[in-house]
Length: 193
Length: 168
Image (cartoon, rainbow over all chains, first blue to last red; front, side):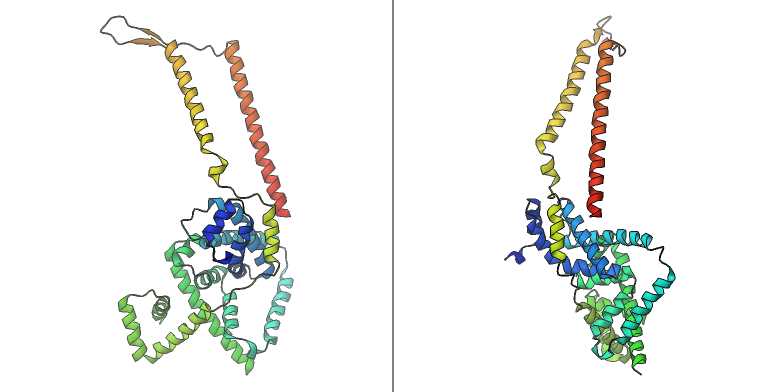
């Protein structure tokens, strides 16, 4: 029965002091929040940390949610700002890592992929791989549009951009995605021959 | 071709005009190259739409709720500061202003040299260096300093607490 409750009902329950109602909000949004964080950070551990921080920030600021937009849009804007702060901090922390370490990681990553049998790769995996090769913002826009089912206006609101800018960026992101998929497929064919 | 690509994406999103829709349907029937591009983009569009969401670890929700339980409940601003409190502050300041203005009004010395002249008035001088005023000013400054120190204490305590929570 509780699954049928809307975000607004659950938020008012939380604001009345029922913290457990927030567990339901987490359950309803955790997969998308995690996916979005993963698109930004490209690392599962970081994505979990970002998703947790985002939910905690949303909980603290729940009373400021004005309800003039969808809760999901408001939550995704928190995920975006949390990720940007996280990545900025992480970039500063990892500046000292030398190129040798990075090279080892890259080699490990590519060899891991060539080992995988091509026959077991589904089309979805190609698309996922292509999305992971896009820039952070391109991957986020595609994820918000397709998986988050957000309109261009809502994406603009979540990312703090103009909706026309989002429209142009979405188009370019899809063009790049198409190119990436073509590139991956060509590489797979070359590996097979 | 680039322009066609954009039109196809818009068509698949349902964001095309009637004219563009007719043009696409016409091209699909007459242009084999356009049909091939359309099929390719449609296939990508369907694949992205069908992508599954990633799943966080099993303990994600449980760990998160443990942290949430340690948080204070978010309380709407309205209930934090009741209406009576806001009204009380307004009433206090209005009364204080009216009180000061009242005293000033009654202390003004009004005079009129002839019936046709305007009223003349003299604002009473307040000797700020007298002992009673000096005491009041010192008291006022002292209370202000206490209030400022109190708010500094609250502000820094909160910052230290949030920093500790973040490090946990």
